[in-house]
Length: 252
Image (cartoon, rainbow, N blue to C red; front, side, top):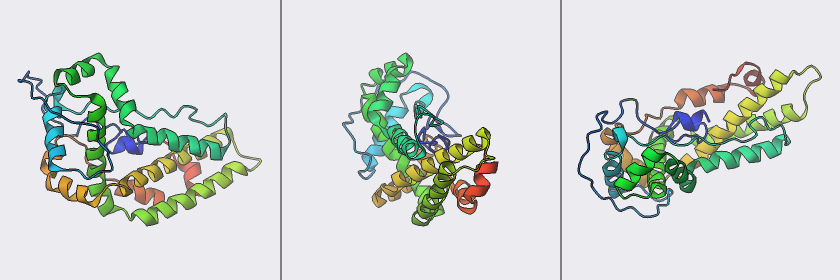
C-alpha cells in the first residue's frame, strides 16, 4: 500500500499512506469548542466536489481530535505473497483489496472500533461512514488536481499494463536458477504496479468540476490533506523495465 498511503488515502489505497494529516497539519491544540452540528448524508465519491462539501468537511474536521482527519485504515492484502493462488488469481485478489480501501462502510466500521474516534463522531453527530465517503471524495479530487497535471494518465496506464504483462510472464515462466527472493521481489513489484494502476483508475473517475473547486480552495485543503506529488514515483516506474525492477526494487 505504498502509493495510496503516499497520497491521501491510505491508499491503504494502495499503497496510498493514510490521509491522517497534512505535513503542516491542522491545529495541534485540542481546545473544546461549542459543537457545530453538520448534516451530511450518503455521498457518492464520483459526484463533483462542491463548496458545500468543503464547508462540511472543514466544519467536521475542526471538531475532531487535533483538528485532523482520523487515520484511514490500511488495505488488508490478506495472502500478501499469493502463496495459495496462481499469479492471475493473485492480481485479481490485489485489485479487489486495493479497491476496498475506499469503501466508506469499511472505513467507517474501522473508525467505530476506536473508542476515542467513535466518541468524536458521536459528539458532532456525524455518521463516520458518511464522513469517510466525504473525505474520500475530497481526498481523491485533491490528489487528482496534482496528478493530472504531472502524469500522462492514459500513457502511464498503458505502460503499467505492459510491465504487468511482462512480470506475469516472468512469474509463470521462472528460470531454473530463480531464487525464492527473486520471486518475492517480482511479486512485490506486481503489488506496486497494481496499486499504481488502481490509483490511476480512481483518479480518472474524478469529475473535472472537482479539480477547479479543490484548486480554488487549496490554501484551506493543504492544512488538512497531504500534498500529492507523484511525478517522481511514476517516472521511476515508467522508465524502469520489469527486468530491472524485479531484481533491484525494494517494496516499501
